[in-house]
Amino acid sequence: MKKIGGYIAFFGALAIVLDLFDRVPTLLQWIYNWGDTTAWAIKIGFIIIGAVLYFRGGKKQEDTTVEASNSEDKN
Image: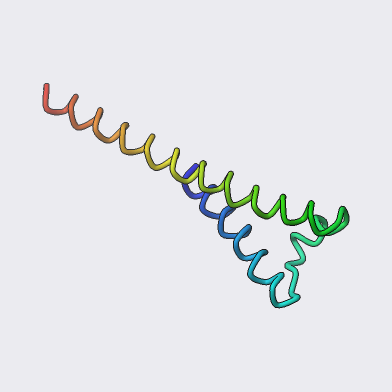
């Protein structure tokens, strides 16, 4: 999930930066059909959801590693 979250957040940030230069990625062209306010909400939502997935994925992997090393120490 960490990798997917990173990609989602990256594309959200990229869409914001490219919008400032009047360049819209073809993949995200559809969000402008509902207007600028909705497009901004979707782009910010991409960043927030991506960050949540990124940080949740990182924490879960660390917990698994700690548990695996603890079980190896007991053997």
